[in-house]
Amino acid sequence: MLEAENLIFESYNRVAPTLHGYDSVTRNLSGIQQLFTEAGLPFDLVPTITVTGSKGKGSTSIFSAALLQGMGHTVGLMTSPSFLNVRERIRVNGQAIFEAAFVEIMHDLAPIIRRIEGALPPDQYLSPTGLFLACAIRYFMQCGVTAMVLEVGRGGRFDDVRLIENQVSCFTPIMAEHLDKLGPTVADIVWHKTGIIKANSIAISAPQPPEVSQQIEQACQELGTTFQQVGRDISFEQRSEINSQVVVIEGNTFKINTPAVYQATNLATAYAAVQALAVGDMHQPKVAQTIRAVHLPGRCDRVSDVPLVLIDGAINRESAEQFRDSVLPFSRIPIILVTALPHDKDHVGLLATLMPYVAHTIVTQVSAQHLHFTDGALQTARQFSAEVTHQPAVFEAFAQAIGLAGQNGTIWVVGTQSLVRDALQFWQQDLEKLIPSNPPSN
Image (cartoon, rainbow, N blue to C red; front, side, top):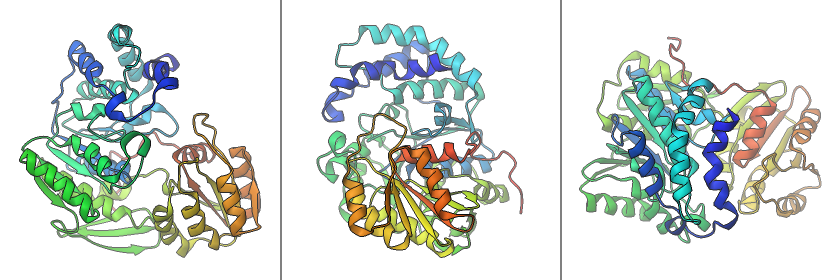
C-alpha cells in the first residue's frame, strides 16, 4: 500500500520545492493524457457530473452520487482531499476502493507512469489528482459503474479532471481562494472553474454573487451550453429540525442527518445536476432513503456525545457563521474551541465569529508538516479573550479540550482540513463507507 501511495505523489514531490506560480504556468495535462492513452483508459466512460467550486463541492459530490445510487445506478465517485486514507478519494456506491484493488491497479500502471515521468522536463510533473483519476477510471471500469461524479481538485481549467467528458458541469459557491495558484482576482478564479464546461452540455450552479453568475453564464453561452442556477431556475425549501435538515425540491422531500443549514443548498445543487444528467427517476422512495443515510465527514460532524464534539472545516468568517448558526442551538456549555489555521486563512474572521460563545479557546497546529503556521491566530485570540491556551501538539490539544469540557460540555473543532483529519483520527471515525447500499426505510 505504501509503495502505491508513494507512486501517486512521487512526481509532484520531485518538483514541489521549486514549484511556484499560477496553475496556468505550472500545470500541464499532457502527461496524464498520455497515461490514459497508453493505459487504454477512456475519457468518456459513462454519464458524468463534474463538480468544482470554492466550498461545498465535496458534499455536493457525495449527494450527487447518493441520488444516483438511490436511483439504481452503480456510481463511481472521486473526491478530494482524503481524511484518514488516500483510498477515500475513490469510491463505488460510497465504499472506498479496497486496498488490494488500489495496490493492483497502481502496480499495473506503474511501468507507464515511470516511463512518462522519466521523459518529462524538469519543471513538469504528473499531478497526484491525475494519477488518482487514472486509478479511479480503471477501478470504475472493473466495477461496471453506470454513472460517475468527479470532484475537481483545484480550479478546473488546468486540473486533470477536466480531461474527462461530462454531460453536466456543477458549480458550488465560488469565492477568493488559492489566490497564489488561481488568482489574483475572483474573476480569475471563475475563469479557472469554468474550464470544466463542455460544449453543448448543461451547467448547474449554486447561488453565486451576480458577477460570478454572469461570468459562468457568459462562458456557457460561448460554448452553446445551457445554464441553470439554484434559487433562480431551480427552487427549494428547507426547515431545520434537531440535528437535521428537511429539504423540499420539486415536490421531493429529503431529510439530511446533519445540523448544517448550508447542506440544503448543496443537496439542491446536487439534485439539479442529477436531474440534468437525465439518467433515471428521482421520485423513487429509495432515493430519499439513501440521502437520509449519507455520512458527510468533517462537515458539522458530530463524532461524540460525551462530551459533545462537533468538527467542521470552516476557515473564514462566512463559513464560521454558518457553523455557529447550525450548532449553537444544541451545543451545551461550557463550549471549548480548538482551532488551527495556517497563515493564509481568515483567522480574524473565524475567531471573531466563534469566540464570543466559547469558555476557552485552544490554538493548535496540525500533524501535517507541509502547512505553515504563524502566531497570528494566537495573538488575535488573546486580543478577544484571556481564556486562551497555546498547545501546538494537536492530539494533546484535543485531550486538553476533553478535560475542560467535561462530560456535559461541548467541543468545537474548527479550522483547516488537516485539523479535521486529525480530529477524525483522534475520535476514531470510520470513513470506509459514506453511502449505505441498503439504507433503512424509516
